Amino acid sequence: MKKAAALLLLLLLPSLPAQANDATEPPGFAAGNSAAPAEGVFGQAQELVLRALSFIGVRYKWGGHSPDTGFDCSGLIRYVYQQVTGQVLPGNAREISEVGISVDRSDLRPGDLVFFNTLRRPFSHVGIYLGEARFVHAPSRGGRVEIVDMTDRYWQKRFNGARRLAI
Image (cartoon, rainbow, N blue to C red; front, side, top):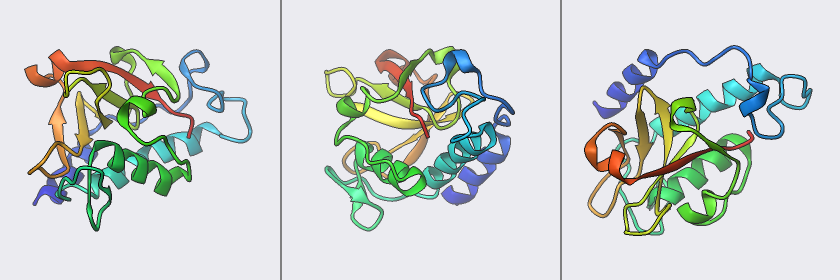
């Protein structure tokens, strides 16, 4: 049921833009860069979202980094990015928050990483932005990978920023 809801959400997501905006792209995103044409970049962003959504319902496990054992928030992000892009990201949410370029909340696109202060320290939680103010994440002990709304008061108060990684 949750996977069906996730796929329905994906169908409702706004379509990804057809061209990159050079002013807001990290290195490797420029429209003229033959190593990463715009269609491939946005295709990979969509693949990141789809791959993350495929793990909805996987249980939370502190330090977890695979669908077999469970995920913590950074384990989910690291697993998805490595599977889709081949990139190996740093080990925890704070370290991941130093990769890529900063993105304003109003400029978020599917595939961007969103960071929150959930442990009384900045950048202690991370998720993958889906669009329409929603993101997918591995929540906490007893939880399962899920989609949540960033406009919920809990998440609004704890938002620390967002990053866009070169993919």
